[in-house]
Image (cartoon, rainbow, N blue to C red; front, side, top):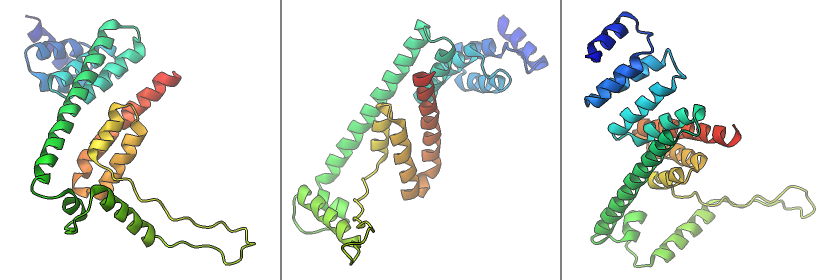
Length: 229
């Protein structure tokens, strides 16, 4: 019986704080995306409304969007750091995200093992290397190739103060899995750096990586605020 009156109230005044209660009703009815849309619109007018952020976090969680849910719960904890309910919700969301990442990693490992049964690791990584060699030998050879490709320059005059230019170390192999490992360990800056490298390496995935970078930047900002707040 409250739902029609709340809808009418919000329709007559889009800046009414009752949007959070209306979104909560929609959440209970299973209309999760509609509840999200209402919260996002209402928070434009009430950006510091803790209850609305809490409802939005629950909506994201219902949609399986654990990262967004974690961000909303952290926003609520900034104003209510000792609230056990919100702390519990955040812990549960973090655990679900870690479980999802673990399942993702295990699935990727399984697929890689299946592929390696028909294609050798060296041929897969080296793009057609036919020579039989161990993985360690392959990586060592690639490392030596990188060092050879970087010219070493040194001053001919031994008394010169100019420093000797050392060869650059080979770039670390970057994958989305590595970036997410950094993220789950709370090393957000390293995760962001990894994703930025992936944007350059795989432009076709740039939009998806850019969205994840934005999420990690927000997590990094909140982490910094908690540590220095």
